[in-house]
Length: 85
Image 1 (cartoon, rainbow, N blue to C red):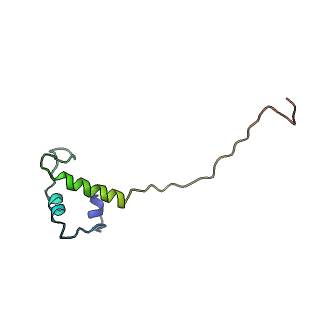
Image 2: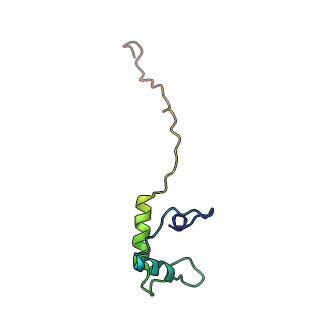
Image 3: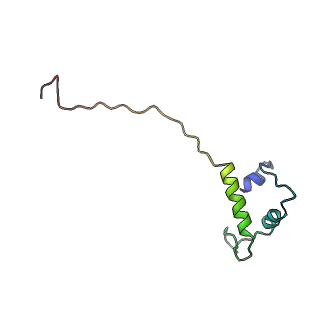
């Protein structure tokens, strides 16, 4: 979600309307447990942020580009040779 708000090049993929005061407030007040990357859920600002994160994940899913290869073909021998065993 952070890279959609502002990526390493300074480009913004999502613009939040200034009328969304609760979302802006929640994003600015979100704190993290000291020494971790886990949000501090005791402050009560995490629910709006979680909902916003789910929306970003739905609208902009992480897509892995996969190159498709032709399937391998196998020869199967059945033990039958022109009707003879």
